[in-house]
Length: 180
Image (cartoon, rainbow, N blue to C red; front, side):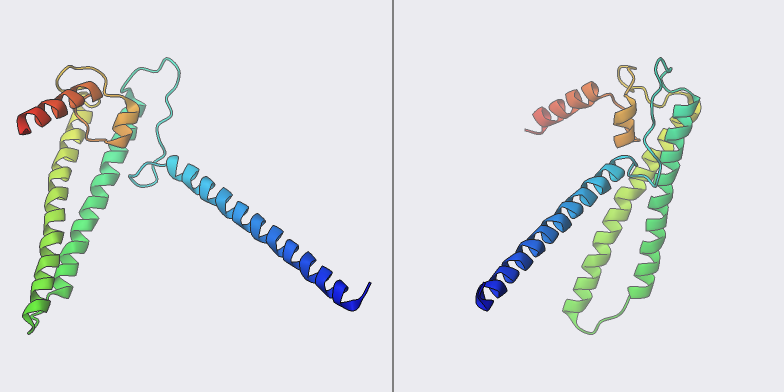
């Protein structure tokens, strides 16, 4: 075989090896991404608390479930309180009297946005406290309107839920009709 053909064949072989290696790398990256998504699905949004695994014929809102949701609510409250502390320190550290009115307005706007977010979180902390009280008195996990079980998965998604999905849907429909 002439030297040019050998060199061309070697280049083609190297390219196909590189393509296979690249495809394998992409495949591995996709598998890693899927694994990461699966791992993320096995923890709740509130700390590293794994979702509750229900047992067959288990009573709803038993002691184990109450402890589980109490841990979720406390972890969530802790995260929110830490965010409040960070905001206070950030506002103290970043507060400056800028001579330029535009810079001052930008800073005030940023602070206003942070304060609005903290106000929403303050209201959420109040709801978390109410939910913790309900856990303590045995009312947690039951719809405030109809008394039906709210459901483990719904509570895992929104631990402060106080309405079952049907009552919440009806409330939203009523709100939509009243608002229009």
